[in-house]
Amino acid sequence: MENQEYRGRKNMFRIGVLTGTLTSLFLVALVLIVYNFIPLPFLANRNQGMEVKLEYMDELIQEHFLFSDEIDRQRLQDGIFSGFVGALGDSYTQYFNPAATERLLQSRSGTYYGIGAVLSMSQDSNVAEVVRLFEGNPAEKAGLLVGDLLTHVDGHSTEGYDLTEIVSWIQGEEGTAVILTIDRDGEVLDIEVIRGHIQVPTITFAVKEGNLGYLRVSEFDQVTAGQFAEALAEFESFGLEGLVVDLRNNPGGNLNTVVDMLRQILPAGMIVSVEDKNGRVMEHTSAGETPFEKPMVILVNEHSASASEIFAGAIQDYEMGTVVGTTTFGKGLVQRVFHLPDGSSIQMTVAEYFTPNGRSIHEEGIVPDEAVELEIDEDVTEEDDFVDNQLERALEILQEKLR
Image 1 (cartoon, rainbow, N blue to C red):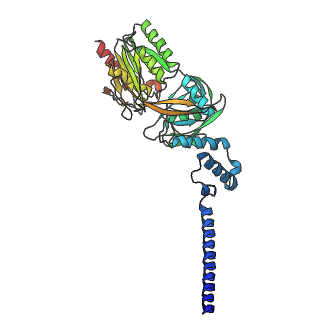
Image 2 (cartoon, rainbow, N blue to C red):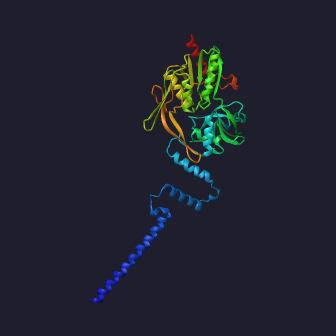
């Protein structure tokens, strides 16, 4: 009886040892499986900070990535910051490294080192399109043409990138080269352009028959308000009877610049109001000291955006002129540049703007008072022979108002 009881306890002991051994082996196997799928530093604490996670990812790259010796560390870091900001899902919110930040500030000043071309986002193809070339500047000399679609800059695809980011790639040190890959009516071309010192002629003007003024605004830079004032003074010396302001293909620019320009011609009252995420409203107003009291026409098209829409919307709301052309781009958001300690920056969407009558035109655009599509004569080969039917209609409207 005792021997049977002893043997029973001995068997139970053996079963326990075997069970314990199998359990240990199972746990070891489980740890090995987990090791292959979950980084060990995160087994102890799954709530590790982003910095620790990035450090561990960097260690993995250095140890295992086949081409780790070829890594551009600066580009890798820029990619982290760009991806972080890009995950917000707003195409107007962008990260700029120090070099790109400097070029961004230069472009907004009205003088910069670049190629002398104005770009706008093509709504049909979602890539940048050349909409204007500054006469005698590098882009024109290199053979770029209005209507060219810019698909790559130095091999970097432009698709999905904000226009400001693309422009920052094109600008650079004077005398350096940039390779632009363009789509010209289905033909893909690589064009090398040597960057130069560009002084942007943001305002061009002429006196048309009947003392009618024609004033074209290519973009709203820091120098534009002064150029606008000079043009208006020049017109007055000719005894101006009416004015066409051409904002076609104008991608926008500085909010303060367009406000300063409108203060030169609007009556007393609201110019534009800007509302941020917390409902705080900043109102930009005109004292109405020098209201423009002659007939006016504003020309716009689908490439007129941002500050152009503020200008056209204000003239339309005050019924100071007739807006002619096609519906504008529809960018009613305001961006602000935040500078970081290392010289880099974040351009961030911070507010929405509203016209004097309180209209939000974001993704709607300014609808012209008179819709006029641009007619393209395929047989015309010389620019001097081109007939601008939109401008012709604008001048006709001024003449009708003066009768």
